[in-house]
Length: 267
Image 1: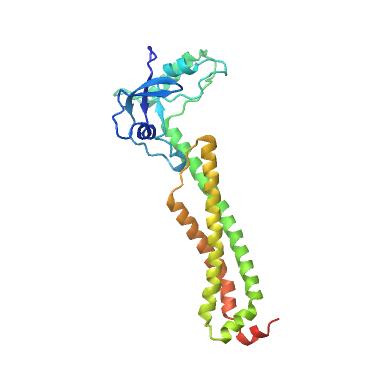
Image 2: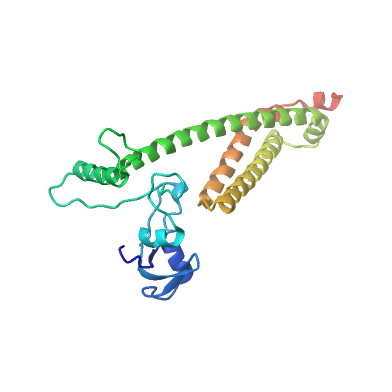
């Protein structure tokens, strides 16, 4: 730290991209047009949920080297102020974690030049608190998405039911003709049920493409990691097909139950 050495520890993503089949230790990489010597590689780090899928896309350099190259300093002014600092500390045996947190807080107050009567101008968040906050945010986000998705599926299902009901009414003579030449009730039922499933499946595919496009757009615009697992596509198509079955069964049963004579007389 005191010598401001330009060294770097690579995460798995830059390591695999830069040195896929070579030992990176001692090799040189460039960060902001400055050479840095690789002194280590971080092992795979599983993220907490899909929004944290970029744990491996990281490179760590000393704060002193970062300050020298990019001009970042810990000051009382807002310009050039360090906004976030992660500290990894292992308390000595017999030292409680609360004591370590208090010591870190005291060091931060001294570095910020705070008097005894002044409140902290920083927030200290432990890993446990961050995990609890993440769980709360994840749960709230999940419930909100479930509620929005349920409403969207309900509205879409009602729309499919209305479309299929109109289709049955407009094709009454066609249904009567098919029954008159020997089509069984089950065949009529499956025809209209499959049409409903086809409509909802098309909607599901379009929704997946639209959502994937938004996700990739966010990724390219902000470089925020976006995870698009294949099973989410399968679940989306499955839910869409289920909506088609549930909301298409009533029009399909109505079509299959039409009397052929009355259907042929329909104007």
